[in-house]
Image (cartoon, rainbow, N blue to C red; front, top):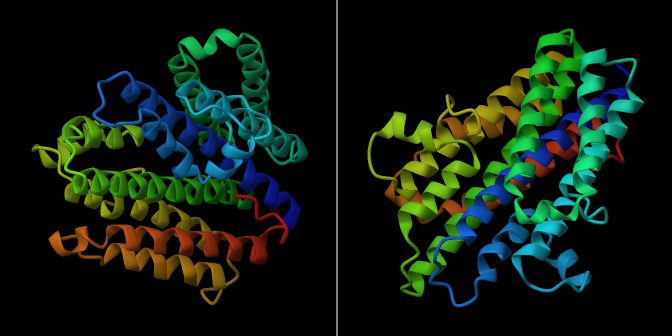
Length: 317
């Protein structure tokens, strides 16, 4: 497969996944913002969203007021924010248009209709009064895209590159959410503030659709260590780091010329690190360092995939 074609397919799926992840984070944060908070500055909750996406500097440069509505508009409809839902869906549609001959008609229609519907939805500025409808719509469209892709696309290299884009983006997002939430929780503990642990950690689980899964697996109170185990090491949890690396490695194996391929070796080592990690009480104090290191390795893996299979300059995060 031509590297440029593979590049468009990879980023089409990655941008769709990023739009969904952004919607998930904002949905949970919007609901949490309506609950009583002991924080001295209510904007601290919204600041976490900017920290997860590493957009604090861009948000500040835009000279926007520090309030939740501004963050919502910045993360949802701002075309100058490359990670906003608007920008992600637009970029996904442009990548799909560039490979129109390599994807099925159903896939193109899903992506193009998503883009057209988004433009119609965002014409009404009143969406900000009830943003949950927007978030639910984005998640539904993302599910539809993946379902149509799995159900209609030939299981060849085009399919494998689409799946790789999905799971490397999902792994990055899960690690960011878990890291930022752990740091926020430790800061609250050091300041002796009652954050309401149940609602705090329940919001973390809901942001990755893991609340019901947690109840089914552990059948007990929600604890930070078990959340870490679920989201890092449970291969049967669809959005866990290990599940993402399992899928990523499997698809890399399909397109790699041999086991000596650099990206495949990197993915295999990273998967082994997750699989044989000991998640215990001692590890809890090391979670931030572990996740920081994981994000660095995932970024390096993305660079290796670009250099080995895609257009080398396509390193947009």
